[in-house]
Image (cartoon, rainbow, N blue to C red; front, side):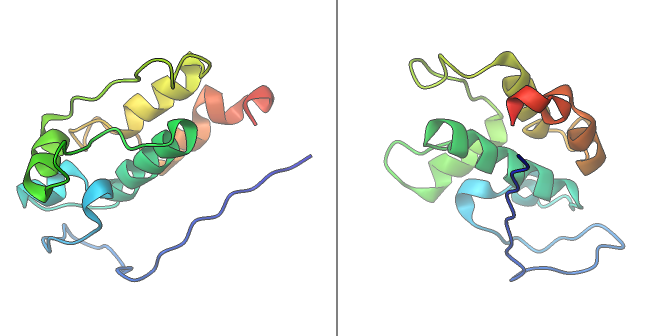
Length: 129
């Protein structure tokens, strides 16, 4: 049985030939380099996909603001500190946690590329599907 998940949002789509500088995106999914306004590239999509994967597995995002305000949310994203809290992650394996950790690297140079994701053992493992 082959299962596929397709996500699409082309509202801000463009061809990336040089670092982008526009501050844009949905706050929960925005990558640190967008907030730092230092320029960003394709790896912001890996960050957003990591956020989505985290939410799909436990039901809430890794970075939140206790009072639902944008500034504390952005501070949390910039800190790069999150966890896999119990009991929500008790039955979720280390393989996908490793994948998420590599997708949510604050430093885009250390963050997985799309190719790295496709080559990750959790993605390649038939039993994880």
